[in-house]
Image (cartoon, one colour):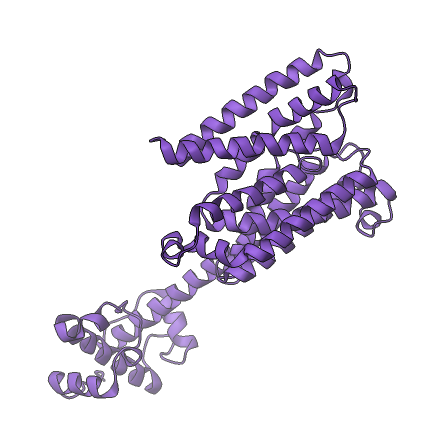
Amino acid sequence: MLIDALLLQLGYNATLVAIGAALLGVSAGVTGTFLFLRKRALVSDAISHATLPGVCIAFMIMVALGGDGRNLIGLLLGSALSAWIGLLCLNWLTRNTRLAEDAAIGSVLSVFFGFGVVLLTVIQTMGVGRQAGLEGFLLGSTAGMLWADAMIIAVGGGATLLLILLLRRPMTLVSFDPEHAAARGLPVARIDLAMMGLVMAVTVVGLKIVGLILIVALLIIPPVTARFWTERSDRVVLLSGLAGGISGYVGAAMSASAPNLPTGPIIVLVSFTLFALSMLLAPNRGALAAILGHLKFQRRVHLRQGLLALAQGQPIYERLTLRLLSRAGLARADGVATEFGRARAAKALRDEKRWEVVRTDQAHEAAAALYDGLRDIETVLTKDQIADIDHRIGGPQEIPA
C-alpha cells in the first residue's frame, strides 16, 4: 500500500493530497528558513494560532449570507485577515511596550487562540455548526479534498515561493545582520514585516493539510534539519525546501496507505524523522561526527603524551597509549621506543620547549593563543621564528637510551 501511495496509485484524492502536501512542504521549508535565521521561530506559533478566530468569523459570516460556510477560499481569507491582525498586534507590542518578544508572542497566541476556541464553541450551537468541520483546521483534514482546494494550495505555495525568490537577498541580509542592512539603506522594518507576511501566507495555505497547530513544525523543523548539512545560507534554503517537500509527500502517502491515519501529524513525524537522522548522521555537525571527532582527539592526546613519556624515559602504563604507539610503529608492545619512535619523541619534546618559549614571550602572544597541546608549531610560526627560538633554547636534547 505504501509503495502504491508513493507512486500515486491510490486514486484521485490521494494523489491530490500528496502533491498538495509536497508543495506546501517546499513552501514552508523555504519560508521557515528566514524565520529560523532571524531567530524568530516562535513568531510562526503566534501567527498560526491567530488564524483560528478568522476561520470562525468567516464561517459565521458566510452562513449569515446564506451559504454553508465551508467555502475554502472564504475560510482562508478570514484566517489571513485574522493572522495579519495578530501579526500587527505582535509588532506593536514589541515596538511600543516593554514586553520582550517572547512575552508578546505568548500574549497574542493565547488571546487569539482563546477567542477562536470560544467562537468555535458558539458555532457548534448553531444549526449548521456540526456540519462545518472547522475542528479539522486545528490538526488538518484532507478527507474529501477537491481539485479546487488542491489548486488553491498549489497557487498559494507557488506565489509564496516566487515572492521569496524576489526578496531572498534583502531577507537574507536582514536575517544575518539587520544593523548592516539598515546602514545600507534597506527598510529593515518593512522587510521584517514582509518576512512575517510570507510566514502568514504559508500558515494560511497549510491550514487545510496540516492545521494551525502543526504548521509551526513544518516551518521550523526543515530549516533546522538543513542546518546540520551546510554552513551556507543559500544551501540551507534549498535543503530546507527539499526536506519540507519530502516530509509532505511521504507523510501524505503514509496517511493515504492506512485507514484513520491523520495527515498533518504523520507529515510532522516524517519531518522529525529527517531531523533525527540529520542530527545523528550529518558529516560535520551531527552527533556521530562529534563522537568520532572526540575519539580522534582522544587518540591524538594519548599519542602526544606517549611520545613525551618516551622522550623523558618514563614508563607507560596506559594500555590505550601503548596500543596506539605500537600501531603507529613508535614503540614495541613492552613500551620500548623504536628508532622511528625515538625521533618522533625527540621532536615532540623539542616542540614542547618551543611552545614554552612562545607562551612566555609577548612578541608571540597571537601564536600562543593557538596552543592546545596538539598543534604542530610549524603551522603557526615561520621557519625563521622557529630557528630563533631554537637558538634561545640551545641544541636539541636526544632521547635517553
